[in-house]
Image (tube, rainbow, N blue to C red; front, side, top):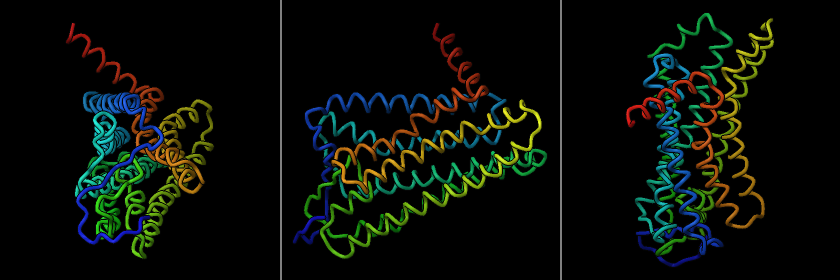
Length: 316
């Protein structure tokens, strides 16, 4: 944190990016552009496939569509500004823009953790209570579950963002990150007790919204595994496990990226490594989620193939 005498309202933040990679801006631009286009294309394909294929009009794929919409919004919150920074060295971001980006990024990250919990509950009902599944997982109930995840998650970051905006900053604070992450912005504030308390508040909220959902997902899968083990036939067990394997891989990928970001924060690592681990956390799951569901799920794979074949026929 900085020690400063500036007392006026902050107008702009300076996004540092990767300090040791300043001579490699165009390669970074190209790599992140490719990632962003892949994320947009793959998640839009999932959304279109679920909408176009009647066989996919099921609760699991309704929540998958929510996850794809979320992943598009999450990456759009951060990557376009990063691309401008890499390509034309656009490193200044207005204070309002910075705090809005902070709110959107953290709100959408929390939404993803909540949606993963909802999706695990869906799998719990499908495997543990198959006879009551259609009654419990109705269209109205699914909409309420998804809406509850979105609304509650988007409320979580408000206190931290509001209090961060009230901290004292230098005239043009330097944010050692590629976007306005809460911790990076707070560390750019002038050294005082409020800034220290904001660091603690942000870290506490992050731990709660990460580990409580993880606990709920773990409990759901404990019941799911017990139910699968009670199935007598090998084929039945294999079929039951295959219905939740994609979600389990997505959860594992998501929390692995969180663990990597946490370790880089706590360990004595170079700044570029810390920034890169956080950027990987922001783009990894949106990039791999569609691949996981397309490669591991026969129904989604079939629907995606239909979309691709239909587009080819319409062009030629």
